[in-house]
Amino acid sequence: MTIKANMTIDKEFKIGNIDERIYGSFIEHLGRAVYGGIYEPDHPEADEQGFRKDVLELVKELKVPLVRYPGGNFVSGYNWEDGVGPVEDRPRRLDLAWRTTETNEIGTNEFMDWAKKVNAEVNMAVNLGTRGIDAARNLVEYCNHTSGSYWSDLRIKHGYKEPHKIKTWCLGNEMDGPWQIGHRTADEYGRIAVETAKAMKWVDPSIELVACGSSNRHMPTFAEWEAKVLEHTYDHVEFISLHTYYGNRDEDLANYLAQSMDMDQFIYSVISIADYIKAKKRSKKTINLSFDEWNVWFHSNDADKKIEPWSIAPPQLEDIYTFEDALLVGSMLISLLRRADRVKIACLAQLVNVIAPIMTENGGGAWKQSIFYPYMHTSVFGRGVALNAIVNSPKYDSKDFTDVPYLDTVTVMNEEEDTVTIFAVNRHQTDTLELEVDTRSFEGYKVVEHIVLENDDVKATNQHNHSNVVPHNNGDAKVDSGRLAANLPKLSWNVIRLGK
Ligand code: AHR
Image (tube, rainbow, N blue to C red):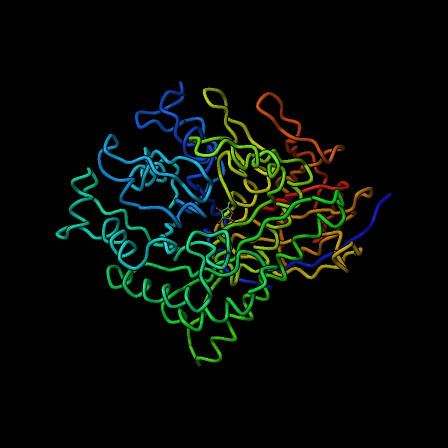
């Protein structure tokens, strides 16, 4: 059986330039993300600093431009000073967020070294849970001030002559959540955030700041939180954050694959709130969105309840992703790109071992989860300008959503490279989607490649010893006289690459 959909793409229908930071990710001091993930000094693949070279290579394959660090919930109890200076002098601390023991073997400077090795910038979070203005401004001075002050000279003494020049900073993490160490009301958070922002920018006026929005769209304080926080911080920050995680808990695939529409709604709502405060303040400045935690997260929930408290780097949040998860991750990426005019930062949470596209075995190999592929495809082929396609697709209703288009899609044009890439998910569970695209605006463009991720088993996974979910490039897209025709297999992720 087949269904039909059509769309028109045009080089003039621009949504906006894609900020490469939309392909960011996240490493938290949590589970085996750092210890046993990016860092394992006894591993045969370890480099001179103890970083796993096999992991470095996989991260580079993803072309991750930005990595949020060091949390997450972890940051709200973190003393950054514990993680700098001679490793043998660093204290072991109880991490109250994840009930583990933090050895502090890796801290700010080592992480900056790691980020450099994968060609990524760091999106540094400061602790607004147990700490505040003083610790935050000192950290900016330690990282970004050239020399001649207490904290910058200490960095030099620690072996880092050049400042790290960290541009993007998060003012705390999920401060609206009762689970957060130092949870605050919106007014309490707004006040501490604005005063911290001012002090951090007095140290380094070139930095960009992200204020905490809601932990998800279903928080009881959502919307009012964003409005109040922005009332306080508007003139002193550049971004408001969004976080969301989904899961197929009810085994309802039609509803699960529609969850990216919740993300769409979340994005539209936060844009509206930010612009409402802009109007109220008669401001010329526009606040953009940092979707700095997003992913599927639910597979590991039960296993995590059994973890021995205060262990070091236990396997926490180690979701093994299925093929259907990869489809939703693809749709979430499409949602982010469709609002590339306002979503300028996004971080897939997380990057290694912890709800991650990359997994490792301690002492063993490293491998790609199913979600690795849509993330890699968009990051590698989705640079440029997002285009607003006119799409006509049949739709369905599910438990929580109405008018869910079977065809979920976004197009990216790269003018420097003369390429156009269509990213598309066919959400139909049984039918191939016959797609026709009016490409007359792109005269002379041909299909370079049609990559497809498909699988008859929606629960198929990759593991350390087998790869069941891998893309092929045998898709049948072709262009003839300004019309592109392609069959998108049932339940598939597609990347149709056009070039001259
Ligand atoms: O990414 C895992 C956790 O999810 C983060 O630490 C926290 O910010 C969120 O609740």
